[in-house]
Amino acid sequence: MQIHNVNVPITVTGRHVQVTEAMREYAKKKLDHLHLDYPRIVDAKVILDVEKGRQKAEIILHCANHITIEVDHTCGDIYASIDEAIAKLTQRMRKFKTRLLKAQHRPRSGSIKHIEEHVFTEESLHANEEDHNIEPVLIHKENFRMKPLFPDEAIMDLELSDRPFMVFHNAKNEGRLAIIFRRKDGEYGMIEPESTKVA
Image 1 (cartoon, rainbow, N blue to C red):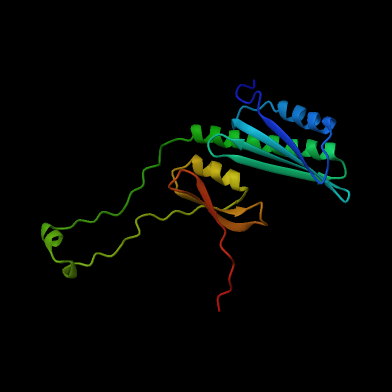
Image 2: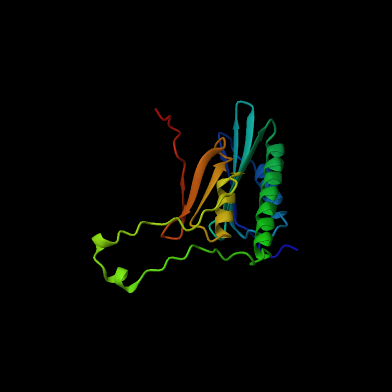
């Protein structure tokens, strides 16, 4: 049963089109019927765009825990575009909840990482720096499979892990390599390296 996402503030605006009351009510009714309790929606924005036979519905959800979900759909009918955008939105929200439930039930066994032991004598600790140049040691190597994700999904994965960053293929930008990282102010930043040819 829906608990959190009730009476969500919804704003419907138009781009290249005057939003009619019927269009506004249709979009709001569809969003009101989202019977999903995660992530908790703070507010929702619907942008309707009609230009040269192209009718697009874009929905942006601002949610708790720094989550922003953006979906859109374009076809020949604005109401059909709203329906398809809502379907995509539902799928994305269900994916978020599935990941959350998996993280909550993830077993803790095997989480301890063993590193190579180094023993230093008392003499070596008090010796001059030039007498003992201790080189940095790679203590842990981790392999993981990068997968195509939308930025909001990458943030969700990062929220559910202890990693300081997440490397993924950005599904919103033709699968380009991207890095989501935690900022000192609690927000998130994203880096998309430019592909350069090595001479």
